[in-house]
Amino acid sequence: MIDISKTLAALALGYLLGSLNTAVIVGKICGKDVRSHGSKSAGLTNTLRVLGRTAAVLVLTGDILKGIVACLIGLQLGVYARSGEATDCVSLLAAGAGAVMGHNWPVFFGFKGGKGALTAAAVMFMINWVMALMSLGVFALMVASTRYVSLGTMCAAVFFVAISFIPAFGNTLYFHIFAGLIAIIIMFKHRENVRRLLSGTENKLTF
Image (cartoon, rainbow, N blue to C red; front, side):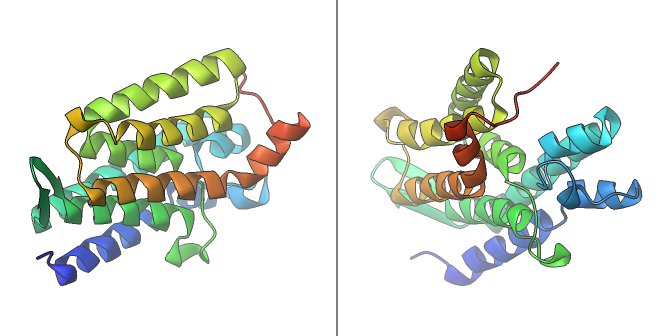
């Protein structure tokens, strides 16, 4: 049986960590709320556009670290599920999902956050680095060919779900639920980007 109390604790702790939205915190230190400028998203890409490279590096570091720490907490709680040969740490999955949800809807900042891509990437690497690396390759390929970060992010999220069903990775139903949830969250948070992509008005990444 799955320890529900520990799993919910992992989800809650991950959510609270995720709610420490680095882009909002760095923006306030710089005297500017990134949620009121640019794309109005409290994430890395908008921080780079609005506050510059130094601020973006701080956001990059913070968003990755909170995903890692949340996953380490989930691992420490140690709730596992087994299905045949497959085994997944359910508390790890819950903490990772919580971190992404917290980033997107932070309790400390009026539930107005970012889009969760960077934190989700950190969580994916903690859960299965091989699958995450393959998804990162899809992201890089899409961004390099189109210069649309949003398109690369969505393609990588969907690809992660698709390859989670490959038997060689040995994932349980809980992993599939986690992967699907993350993809749904990312697609939902990028719905405005989808509209702009379809209308040809989406911003391209410039170097």
